Structures are given as structure tokens and as C-alpha cells.
Image (cartoon, rainbow, N blue to C red; front, side):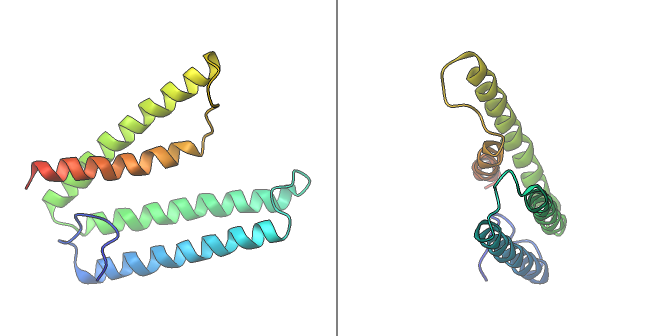
Amino acid sequence: MINLVPETYSAPPSARRRYIWRTMTMFVLMMTAFAVFYAVGGGDPERFALNLAMVLLCVGFVMAASYETIMLIRSLDELQQRIHIMSWAIGLGAAVMVVFSWGFASVLLPIVRFEPIFSVLIAVPGYYLSLFFVSQHYR
């Protein structure tokens, strides 16, 4: 069985299967929604209702994916839960510092302006990188 979240081998196979199927289904649905959104002219400022619907769908997707990740981690043993929670704290704390620094610097300096979507693109690798280093401590 493929393992999309490192260090979740102590989770019961049923929990891992649930996570894989649900997150992959959400991913396919979200990519389909984006394709349809742009095919029907989404993103145009005059299509407010369509744009708002896509924003709400994206928020719902993030909430559902977060819920599935939490449910998977809750099915782990105590040590693995500790590793993941520490990784969240370190990775997301580092992401907040990077996001704040970049946003503040983009106001004062002539650099690339910070866009909020970058926060997710910084936080996720931060979590996985810290997960790698924290898990090395317990090997």
C-alpha cells in the first residue's frame, strides 16, 4: 500500500486506506472543479457568484483534507502522534516566520510581492521537512 504521509506505518491499514481513498477523491474532484471553473470563464471579475463558489469550494476542500489528516494522525500510536504534532509546530511556525518576513519585506523593499497562496506552498514543505528531521531524532 502506498503511504502518502510519511511515518504513518503504525496506523491501522483501514485508516490508511480511508485516508488514501478520500484524499485522492478530493484531489480529483478539486482538479475537475478547477478545470470546469476556468472552462466556463471563472476568474473574470464580472463572474462574482462563480468566483465566490470556487473560493468556498477551495475552503471546503482544505477543511476536509485537514480533517482527514487529523483522523489519520489520531489513529497512530502515541510516539507517532508526538512526532507529527512536533512537526506541525516546527514546520508551521517556521512558515509563519517566513510568510511574515516576506510580507513585511515586500512592503518595504522592491521585491516580489507576497501573495497569500504562497503561505500554503511554504507551510506544507515546512511540515514535511520538519517531519523528516523530527523523525530522525527517534530512530
